[in-house]
Image (cartoon, rainbow, N blue to C red; front, side):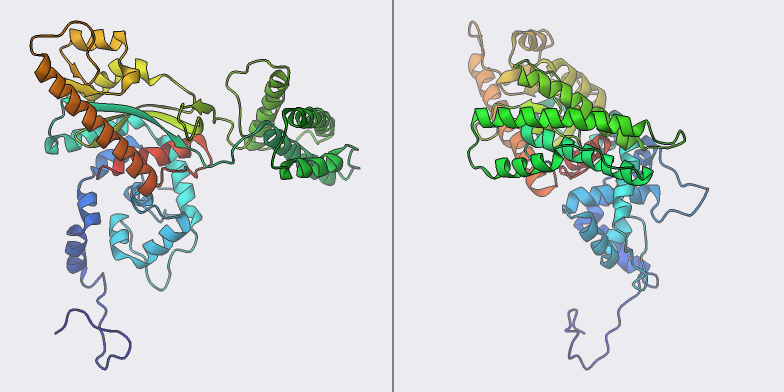
Length: 438
């Protein structure tokens, strides 16, 4: 009997085996697949406990178990599929169903892809990076070698957002405030206040269509938008006083309004030529800050900056923040992190030139740690051997670390982070960084 047959035009009826009736056959096939190998390399119960997940005993039973919720996020990073495409694949692929601890009938498939977003929000609020990394490192340690050697580098995981300019940011703020005024006026059944929004909208459209914008034109546009925004904010404040006492507005509304008020203050300072700290570049993602990277192609990036260590091909997060930080002063912390995770003293460490400051050199010399840093001072007796070790470490860092970053961003969904909240972005990055190793 042939193993592969054509479906259409076949004279002999084809029997499609049921997963329930032939569970052992399907399960063994799953375990022997690449996805099954990943499934067996994950400490599910310990990872569930690190997220503090449990089945709810109240209300409607959840479609996915705690294991299934974590598995969905792993599949999201592993496949690089959109939420909609991942749900479609889950409906049709029995291996994905085994991986997510769920059985989906052909007659009643999952239709709402937004369930993935809800699960991502739930896990994002419960994510503890340090605790989860400890669970994974304890489980993987017996299968690892060279755990006394650490590679270190930093990168930025860009958030999905339009490139910010002052004019765009102010116009978006004006649009949102104007929309709120219209909504409140309609609710209260009062006349809309007079303003120059329509006129400024036409001017903004003409300005945005210009290929080249002079500094004088840009400054004039910003001045007009600031004047309009202050006027709209005053009108919104007056209208809000007319709302009934028991009116309930969402936290999202107040968060965005606070962000716009801060933007007005910052843009007025910039207009006067003053420097601004913690500059907001998006009203939707007020936690994003510009991070100057100094690259030729991208001088500024917008997203989370992470300092990453790699031990035997396994990537771990030392520090991650949406604010810029100097990774060069974190070498001692990364060594402590590696020793705490793998319970082995670090003997070798590789990093680029930003880590090669005098404090880090002194710390490594004092603790007998070989580095990839260029030698300073007099030559040692065994300088040739040390030079060979330094070159090997530098080559490993340049190939393995940079290669890991490229793989994460090109194949595991970390080129642009499409999550819409700070917690969800961190969760997205966490799974993308860890599961690329598998």
